[in-house]
Length: 157
Ligand code: HEC
Ligand code: HEC
Ligand code: HEC
Ligand code: HEC
Ligand code: HEC
Image (cartoon, rainbow, N blue to C red; front, side, top):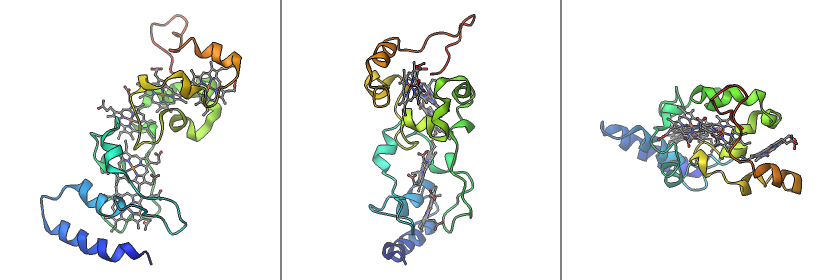
């Protein structure tokens, strides 16, 4: 049994007793705990400060994690997909060279959902984590991505 769970459950029952306690605070009573891990050892810790400072900082936990209300959680739990809110970039990705990054494409450039920064903060040095050779350096000089032929709309990278 996870050692923190007992004390946290007490805390949660106190919180739920207060009608005005925000949903996010309830989630963070457990997930805000440093070092919180799943039984398989994967981190389930959410850094509230990092999340607040991200582009997603204005969204509540359950705006993304729909169907999760307190604990226990629904099983199995589906993690939110970027596509459900960012239809346009998600629709353009399959036509991009970056489609080969697969299911992790969005987060490999933008970072994890809890850490996402403004898109225009993605600098060539970040692209260079994957593209380090001279040829790519040259291509990266053409940032931001070119306009689609015959369209005034920019094509997502
Ligand atoms: C009482 C403690 C507790 C509270 C409160 C709680 N969680 Fe959890 N959460 C857990 C535990 C423990 C797990 C590990 C899997 C399980 O037991 O369901 C988990 C798993 C998760 C996962 C799945 C992570 C993964 O990748 O498998 C998500 C997402 C999540 N919680 C979100 C939330 C949200 C959103 C809230 C608030 C609405 C919340 N949790 C409230 C304890 C809690
Ligand atoms: C913008 C949507 C969004 C918001 C807001 C959000 N999450 Fe998540 N969360 C995700 C996605 C997507 C994942 C899957 C991992 C990833 O891609 O970053 C995730 C993963 C998780 C996990 C699994 C551990 C991990 O980091 O992978 C937990 C636990 C969790 N979220 C809890 C929360 C809690 C608690 C809040 C509110 C304080 C919250 N989330 C707010 C989208 C969101
Ligand atoms: C529940 C809806 C929702 C989900 C799910 C979601 N986002 Fe967002 N995202 C938003 C909203 C709303 C904003 C705008 C926030 C603002 O402008 O204050 C945003 C902003 C962004 C931005 C900044 C855009 C800019 O104009 O600079 C990026 C990048 C982004 N999200 C990427 C992602 C990625 C990657 C995922 C999946 C891991 C994801 N989002 C999941 C709703 C969502
Ligand atoms: C190869 C890196 C890369 C990948 C992969 C990527 N992005 Fe982007 N994204 C960028 C860059 C760079 C920008 C800023 C320039 C632009 O607007 O195209 C951006 C812009 C954005 C924006 C803000 C502008 C807009 O079009 O709304 C959002 C939201 C976004 N991306 C979400 C996503 C999502 C969701 C995915 C996965 C389906 C994804 N991105 C995949 C690099 C990437
Ligand atoms: C997570 C790794 C990753 C990141 C981050 C990344 N790319 Fe890529 N990129 C790839 C892969 C994989 C390919 C396809 C194989 C190749 O051509 O190198 C590709 C292809 C390309 C191509 C076409 C190259 C060619 O030879 O036709 C361009 C241009 C490009 N990326 C630009 C960018 C830009 C701009 C960024 C930053 C916004 C970026 N990439 C970030 C992995 C990445």
